[in-house]
Image (tube, rainbow, N blue to C red):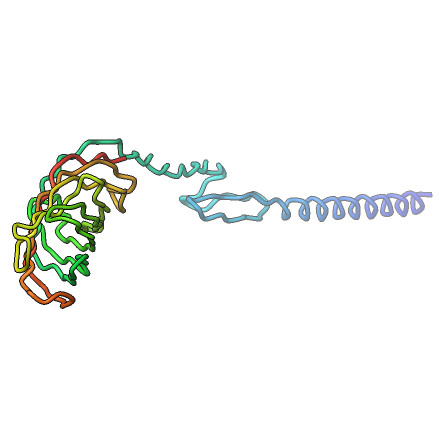
Length: 224
């Protein structure tokens, strides 16, 4: 009877030992799978251990990422309309072809002073004079500094010869209308008073020539 009890006791101890070993194994396995996330600036590190601990300098607190605010482009200030006083004098050369009943200005190439940076003048013109003083048609472009200003004579423009026959000096008077431009003179308007002169030296009709030329433009430029 005692032998039977001893055998039963041994079996119970074996079962209890096996259960304890099994529980210990499960507990150890569960403890080994615990993982924490550690942060240091932008560096992220995961630590797995029974009792995981972040390395020195790391923390389990996730850093707050500050939203990057893109700077907004500065608002472009649109230039406001203005009235600009102009008083420019241009001197250079004028190309001419004249006959008994016409004067053709084939080219004007002149440099300006006090011209708001519009230092170059290019132009053309024509007249069909029936008298010693008659109307004159002409147009030109003032340019410089990346800007241009377009002008053309209105009906008040006249070309008057000092003498009835060549050689003679031609005086130009009247108004030039501003017809826009480019750069800061885009869309510009206004009227400029014109005074100028050039010479006709050849006495032979139908002959081309190039002579000295001078013109002064004064008035206001209305910019947009």
